[in-house]
Structure formats: C-alpha cells, structure tokens
Image (cartoon, rainbow, N blue to C red):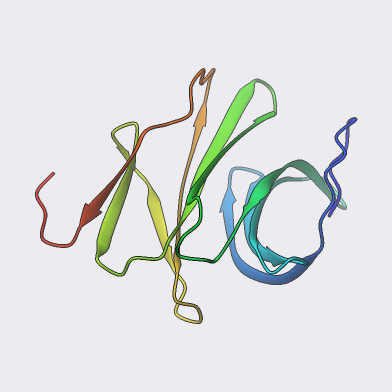
Length: 136
C-alpha cells in the first residue's frame, strides 16, 4: 500500500486482520512487513481504491504504546483513533469519553479498538480503559 497526494508512507500488508466498511470507505487493520499492526483508511472508487491515510504502526508487545491518532482529508477533516488491547481484563475503552469499537481477534492474544470522527482535533485523545466489572 502506498499513500498518494504527496504522502510518502509505504507499507506491505502481510496479513489482513479486519476490514470495516462505512459509507464508501474502508478501514483495514493489518500486520505489516515489520510484524507490527497498521491501519489504512481507503475510499472506494469506480474501479479501484484511493488510500486516504496509512496510520503509523503499533507493536503487538504488551509493553508498548497502545494508541495512535491519525487524521486525513476527505471533503473535510476526518480522523481515526485506534489502539491495541493486550489486557484481557479490559472490557471497553473510552476516547475522550466516547466508547470505542472493539474487534475481538481470536487468532491473536490482542484486540483492536477504534473510533472515527469529523472535525478538527487539536490534542491527542485521552484514553480510559474500563476493566471488567468496573462501573463507569
């Protein structure tokens, strides 16, 4: 995958983990050539796809940074906030008080959380991990 419109990011998707469709776009979570998790936001065209953003990568390691926030342009400013959950006791994750979607990936020992939005986001989101049995 290679970003367009002057962006220089390039990565190889070795294994697709999840594909989520919304409107005429797709979010694709995958394991890249470094063995890390990556995320791409793509827009469906008539005969192809346009890559709007390839987010950075996150390690599968339990001791690594867990969240990434990436923005892209598509008829306005849009963003995706996503992360890796390695703790099986985490029931949900909030991003600036909004509940993130969670993908259970039974093939691996981690889960992926994500949320998308519109508009300017000036600061990285605050994340709150909610453990099983905790009250919000």
